Amino acid sequence: MTELLDSLLRGAAVTARFSRDATLQGMLDFEAALAAAEAEAGVIPAAAVAPITAAAHASELDWAALRDAAAGAGNLAIPLVKQLTARVKARDADAARFVHWGATSQDAIDTGLILQVRGALDDLGADLDSLIAQLAAQVRQHRATVMVGRTWLQHALPITFGLKLAGTLDALLRARADLANVRQQVLCAQFGGAAGTLASLGTQGPAVAAALARHLGLAQAATPWHGQRDRIVRAGSWAAALTGSLGKFARDTAMLTQTEVGEIAEASGAGRGGSSTMPHKRNPVGCAAILAAATRTPQLAATLFVAMQQDHERGLGTWHAEWETLPELLMLCGGALATARTLVQDWTVDTTRMRANLDITHGLIMAEAVTMALGETMGRLDAHRRVEARCRDALAQQRHLLDVLREDEDITRILGVETLERLTDPQHYLGAAETFVSQVLALADATVAPSQPGRKST
Image 1 (cartoon, one colour):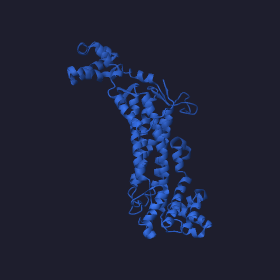
Image 2: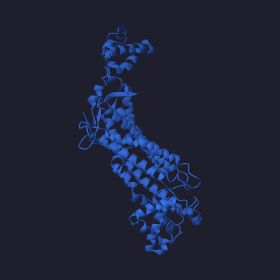
Image 3: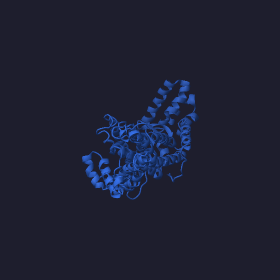
Image 4: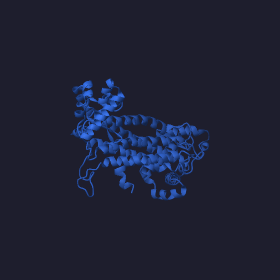
């Protein structure tokens, strides 16, 4: 079932990082680097490195046998080390004695996972940069496109589509800044031996740990982190927060695609967004995929937080709960990012419909503007009561608010008809929208140069 939905819900590049072979290769890369590090420190013979490295390829393993043995062993590393040792022995019996020397299963599994996470963060960072560039281009294009701002799902005040997108862009820029911190804190080798002391290596433990991290291109942790799982949580939380931001973006976009709103349309075409029974449908399938990911990630992140309650030096069950949870979080994040990129690249923005929807309330959306202007003379509370009464009249009479306001002698005497006309024009009540847009674009310019992908607007 999972593989059938990969293209819909998970990012292809990130998913490949957590494939069967990639998972096995991560642990094998640890074993090869461990041999090199130990030879460098004089712990094992230098001649043992080449045979171990030559055998440390996932293609040489019997993965079905590993799968079956993992149930009894409690993890994949134990049967993997056995198979690796047998394959090294076939090349060099003496070298086989030094496979996995001084390490524990969790060292191989954790470090292998971190190597996979590093690749996944590379992919996610690249996709995030691309989406940031796409959104920045859209913010520039629509910085003056006036639309309805909605609160509690109701018309509130005029905003610009550029400002709406700038909110998402700002969140993505924070995610990008956070990614650098996540990489620094998370991408550390795990090497502590049976109980986190490396006693099996005598006085050479720290030297081997440093060389191991260097060979793998990872940071060296100040202490083995078998029981301290905040690194795993940091990576998962980052992915969950980013997916949540994309979910908010998808939720807004989906509501703007509703037939009655019609301000955005997802790309259409053969096999996309249709219905099995209704030929006319143009469903927001991209938004649905992003929202599916954003719905699942909070619970996955919660699992990682619960798993922090490890037992003593090495956990029982809680560590095991991370193995599928963190990869799934990262894969769902990758899928949401990839889908968001396609969504923004191919959507149609109907600026005419945006402007028309501002007039649905027949000027009522501009009541605050009139109230604030009138309040300068009448006082805010009295002005609010006066304009509220005129709003009720406009609704009851099904007339435009401006026409009703013109008939109020006190209001027209204070403000004048020309001022009322300006105050009821949405274009003239955008506040600091342009300032906020400019501030976010300046942040984007300082980090990622915006691309110029194709767009469609009407």
